[in-house]
Length: 477
Image (cartoon, one colour):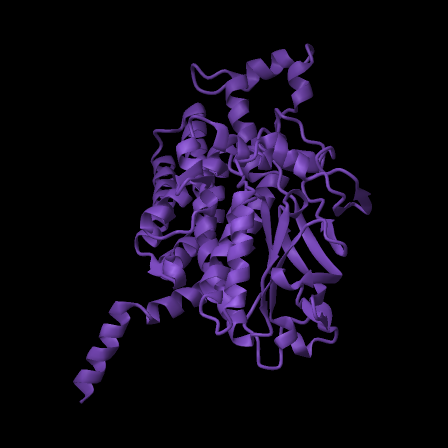
């Protein structure tokens, strides 16, 4: 099958999927005023594959096949670096908002391929391989649903007052299983073709029914997408240059007694592998995460330097210190991301994964530094970020002359030029979109504490740690 065009991708979403938004069922996500924006944003992936500027990066040709690079199973560090560069480029095309319609789904596929290859029963790996080839060859868009709603966070899945608070198998049939539950924080679900479901945690021996992984078309009966309205307000393009054009939808994805056929079940009842699958997915997905954060932190650095210049304060010592801090923040993130690829670790079937120590260090570095970076940018911009004029004030002949006279910057910077940069910074840091990015910095792809835990675990397996422990044992004898 050839690569899909943007129009073919958009047409594939008109399939009677059950999507709910503010209490109403949406008949066509491509025509909805909010979701349609998300669809257009996601089409960036398909546009890049047709673009002369990006085709060599976005498309792989090997063995007589041509397919999206997102589906390239990483076999070495170079594969991971090219994947990272594609994610970075796509996010830059999205004006700092990641596209994610193939990134997160292929992260899940790589994890499934690696983990199922180690199972005693080869049928699960065969099913994953067939599904992977189906998605690759048809150039499909994918979502991944992993995070359960959890209920009482202290209690395990089997100990919840309502056992459905973690997705589980409620019935078994000869031709498949029936599942019930809900996954939260599921990105891009309204505008993809398939959703992959993974366990969210390690399971105990008595939690076989919760140890389930599968994939289904989004329009499968019983799959209900309850879409978050966050950031759906009226957005004027002058005031919100990013969020006026770009949008990502998030859902609570409900599985209301949904039938999953056998050929789409990739793990069932294997409590030992459930945790391994959850962890392996995170290894790939946090690499995706730090890759798509790069254009965001670059935008903060560039905006900070530009607005400091426009405000005439670029030469001040404290301003230079803030800019140096931002540069170090951004370039350290890039270096750690690249090092995670260069120090890749082997997985089953000949594929590799990013080094878990480096990738968790990168994610932790980004998350812990993001709010300080935003603070520096807002300090350099000034309070006019939230007190400045609106689009209508620039078009009204009675008010525009005052804006042009009084909102100028240093000599040579007119008011319109200065306020365009202010509005970009406002959208990036002081709008619904800015708040979205700040919350993602803390919670997306795992919590701050989860990243710390993985850093500790990875380092104890690191060669230097092992050598020191061996040396200590030697000296004690």
